[in-house]
Length: 318
Image (cartoon, rainbow, N blue to C red):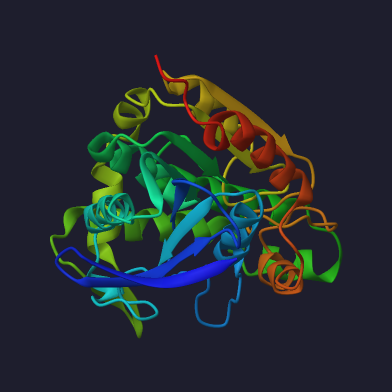
């Protein structure tokens, strides 16, 4: 693929890359990639976690004749701003600005701008779409309800895993009462954040982006999701423990446009195939081993088939 740098403004300066097919004719469709949570750069990387999923997605789209725009989140990479002071609506505004910047590119068909959300990006994409009316949405590893419910589900998975774990590690974790204290600690923290008006709070040496959490708790995701009328593709892996795999079908059911939903049998939250059983306790080690793997071939095959019908083919002139 060919790449060029791009810069656009909200209340901060955001920097990213636009990828193009090596050879193309006419105005191109383009996919804007909306990040998952955390201080993520344009390639999908955070400190000590080189996922590179967004760069791989851009390469994939270029290989099938589609441009892609990906950018460094506020406070990450070359973009301005402070990650910890960033709220959910700041991220929505940044996504809107990315689409508006894409529409001004001379190589791009402004009527064929699509949004691809990963993880948190699946929650942000309908809110962005409400303002820019994208030509379609691709939702990868998304949850059909709030960040709070998703986080609480992750803790429940952890508790169940500890209760059923065999061997010394299971005995040790149960002895430390990990499965009994996690929910209590999480609920206390969430309640404290909800009652606060601070942008950032500290717990010991840890900074927590309270504004972002609070705005997610208050956001009525299902309203914007129900307002989506464009084509939607939703894909989640069956080995995803950060998003409920069954929610992929809820996402498709709740939108009003034509929608397709798929579960990929071995795929995890990082969009890689995983041979190990799904596990919250072993999540870091599983992810670390998966960074060198390619994106799930099954997922890419599904996206390509959907893209041939909804992105690559230009709409008929009436």
